[in-house]
Image 1 (tube, rainbow, N blue to C red):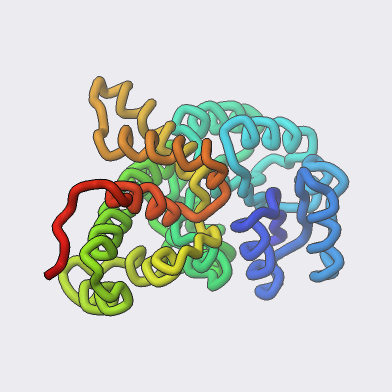
Image 2: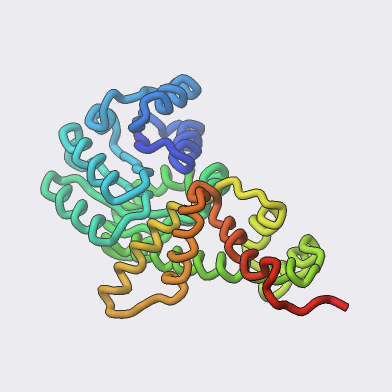
Length: 296
C-alpha cells in the first residue's frame, strides 16, 4: 500500500524510515522543507511539494504532528488531493473532539479517518514497537494493519472514532503519575544519601519496577534529560486531559499537580527536555536549608 508520512519530527522520521525499509513509503512532507529534503535525499523517496500532492500519490496518509491546530491545518491542505477510499491515520495526540470533527468532515468526501495515537517514545518509534490505540472503522484498520505492523508492536482497536484519543488521555494521566512517583522517590533517595544506581537496580526488580524507572532513572540522576518525550508536549497533552475531565465535572489531582510543575520547568527554560526533568523540581524539595533527618 502506497503510504505517505506528514510530520517528520522525533516520531515521524523514524516511522518513515521503518516504512521505507518495508517498501511502503511513497512520499513525505514536512512544514520545514529542509527536513523533508534531507530525509528524501537519504531514502531516495519523493518529497511532495504540498500535502495535496502527497495525497494524490498515496492510499494511506500517516500524520505525526504536534497539536490540534496542526492536524486541522494539514487535513484541510490534504483534501484537494485526496481520492475516494483514501485513509488518513493520525498518530498525533489531540483532543477527542478534533478527531470526531475531522472524521465527519472527511466522511463527506468518502475518506476514512482513524485516530491512532501512539505510546512508546522515540525508542519505540525507532524500533517499530510503538503501542497504537485506534479509533474508527475496524474493517479499514484490518486492511492497513500489514503496513502499521512496521511501525507498531501492538495495535489495538478501541472502538469508534475518538476512542483512540480517549485511550491516549488515560495513558498520559498514568504517565504523569509514574513520572511524579519515580522522580520524587529518587530525589528522596538522593536526600537520604543512598547509592542511586543500586536503588534503581533493586527497586526496579521488585513490585515498584516500571519502564520509566529502568529507562530514565539512570540518566535523570546523572542530570541528563535528552528528550524521549518533551515536557512541553506532555504539558499540552495533560491540558487536553484536564479539559476532558472538566466535561465530566471532575478534577484529576495528578494532572493538576503535574501541569503546575511542568509550567515551572518551561518557565525555567526546560520545556524541550525529557519529562524526567521533573527530577529537577523534586530535588528542590530537599534543597539546602530545609529541615530533614541526617544520617548518623
